[in-house]
Amino acid sequence: MNFCSQCGSTVRFDIPEDDTRPRHICNSCGVIHYINPKVIAGCLPVYEDKVLLCKRAIEPRNGYWTLPAGFMENGESTRNAATRETLEEANARVSNLQLYTITSLVPVSQVQLIYLAQLDDLNFSAGDETEDVQLFSEEDIPWKELAFQTIRNALKFYFEDRKEGKFPMRHVDLETPAGQYVDKSIQSI
Image (cartoon, rainbow, N blue to C red; front, side):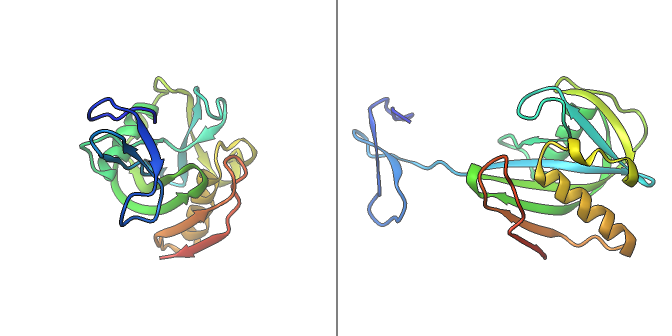
């Protein structure tokens, strides 16, 4: 950030009084600009014994499989964001959303929320950011072609939990550099 979004003056990167972290501070009007993590919301849509995955048609990880998810917009709830992203990316309608995984992606300042959801019907298709959409049984999941560690984690949790018939909310902290995510702390909440 080079300029203040309030008055247009230059900003400095410094620790404000009574704070502990450096922030962008306007040199003229004194406004402190906080830059906080981005929230990603999505669904793990289930139909009978299968899960719905989307093949990405955009970067990052173009051509790899993922769950329908994306950035939350201002003015919407996380549940609404997950439902919207599923509709946008897979033209799929879901219901019975239950928060399932919360992942802190520390190096890239993101928080990802994945809801376990029921796929309402088989009327799904690729959206603008999706090359393909398919239902996969556990044995057919393209594990080596999954786009992100967060998706791999959610799917592993789901198939493990399905055996028990219980789906506890999971919290994962991923603290390694982007693209090299390895679970350092996985715990059920």
